[in-house]
Length: 218
Image (cartoon, rainbow, N blue to C red):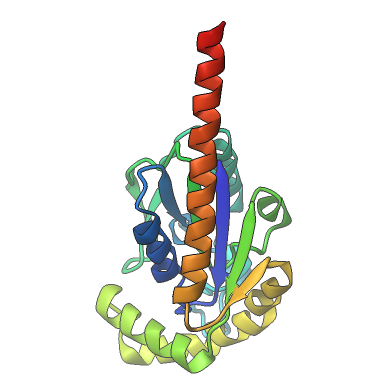
């Protein structure tokens, strides 16, 4: 399996970028895995803010052990069932989502996709979405109010308390690990990456056909 890591700050357009690739490739053997599914059900107390609010933009807010386990399983061709996280209640649901994999191409997107070395070593391509802070904030504001049941005041407070400082401390430095950096205009980058994915899929089909022909000869 070929795994592409897509990192970037909250509101940088990671999910949209991944779906652009999915739509352009239009192949049944490509899947998406979101790091958002791996938020811990209960965050460590020491990463709470001084106001007593949970810090969801800290690396320790995620279940790294389960995430690494699942990525290794996918890499070896085994399907997984990612957790289901409810952003309205900030808790992991008991039910599981639809299985992911096995597949030929995995698009793995999330704010800390390139943070952990063990995970970076599994990735075949690493990209980082670099988008101006005002655009990321505006996108996050609309998303959290419309999709996650948040108030405008809580989104603004969270941005200044945790989102902005955590981006500067932990997220932005991930750029040094990226194979390429994508700006705000993602269409060209999506075209290039889609062509790469299509090439990989074509080579996989060719290799499978050659192997099949070889077996038939024997």
